[in-house]
Image (cartoon, rainbow, N blue to C red; front, top):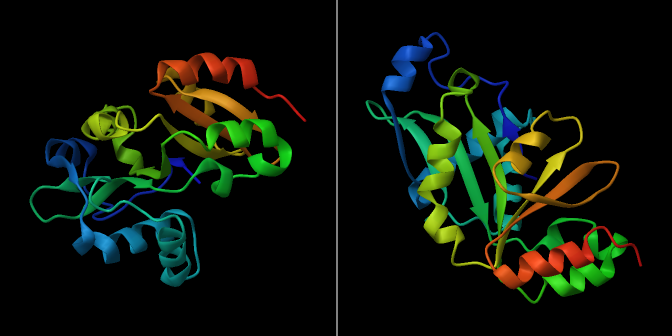
Length: 197
């Protein structure tokens, strides 16, 4: 589930925002980052241990070579993560049960899931999110669409629509957004939007 998390501090929690911002570097993740990613997700989501975060990453088939991290260039400490995953919307959401026609339609397209988008709260409103999204933009364009799920109680729903995502459907737990890259998909999404069977 994609969560734009702006309420946590990571790494050196006493570091002033200006110092942190001036030393942030945006780069790709890799397989050597797995332990840091697990710890980062576990802390952000308030999990009791790292095993649950590990399960999430494996189950979602995370793309560690194309995901993006924001790190302190001096020591490699992670302060932001955009974890992409090969996790189809028809498997990672209740769409198949609630909107089966839409699910069947979407499964014919290539897709990438924004599994987690976590940013240290000191970097909020500083453009780091846009830099992270921009870093993987070319990779996302190789798919027909990107998608993410945002829990109902998070305040970031307007954020996704502002950066071009379309809300496809909602339920009591979350809203599900897509970012079409295929012009035919944009037209068809409007046709299928929130159609119950």
